[in-house]
Image (tube, rainbow, N blue to C red):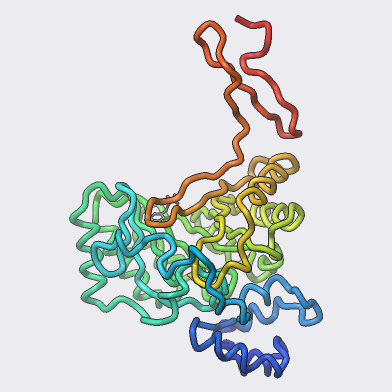
Length: 355
Ligand SMILES: *Cc1c(COP(=O)(O)O)cnc(C)c1O
Ligand code: SF4
């Protein structure tokens, strides 16, 4: 299988593959001692070695800037710990939980929001997994289970099917959502057996792909997504707003269009979380809002994600705009608004002259 061909999981592998010059080896070893490093053969193939700021290479090749911790950054940036009633479960919202059966990924994003936990412990033990599933069974308000990690599609199809079946047996669980980067980083791992394993649940399955740049969506990746979608599994996407990767209107728009062309509906654009050593990746929220306006002004409604911030401390995700609506006083007790159109024009609502 191509993903097993030659995973580049040590800085010296990256040097041998020609992705980093030998003189940077010592600096990269210092990063690799601290945070997991891995780049699949499929990703290496997508990289243009003549491009010094290749958007694939930059997302996966470690950088000494990762060792600089900025003010406000935290080992648990979105407060998962406080909402974890049992190993592998995060229960923040009443109707849905995260279930994290594995803590490893096929490739490690340098801006990962769970970088302090991924790549360390491999997976939940069978007893921990049983306890996690018992937790879901015991809480009737849980309507949706989100498999995440790490990357749940790294599980063997046998283990994936076992989890799907265990969840299928819980009547109040109606939706199983899978958060994954596997179709991008190791597309050959999405097989007919993967589809069969997911469909064992006989529940509504949704797959959410993590992708940040149009160049990630090569032919093999598109084919992997089509294998899921053609089997009746709808796909959404989540992207992280990343400085120098997708923080210009052209790159972000190209990404959203490429996703929709693959029949993947853009779902979330995440503002960068305060994970340690990721300040060099973050934009300002103002810049993010300006990009969202640019998307709204240029592209189909299908291409519009929701721009969200995961509030530090475990308070959940909130949309962070921009807002097109402002109060414009009141007349005769009724509120008036000023509403902005997609070209930036402003209009009163209800229109002037109406009662
Ligand atoms: C992000 C997240 C979810 C999913 O949120 P949606 O807005 O439904 O996509 C659920 N639980 C936790 C703990 C999360 O962090
Ligand atoms: S795929 Fe997700 S969990 Fe894995 S390294 Fe990337 S951001 Fe982190």
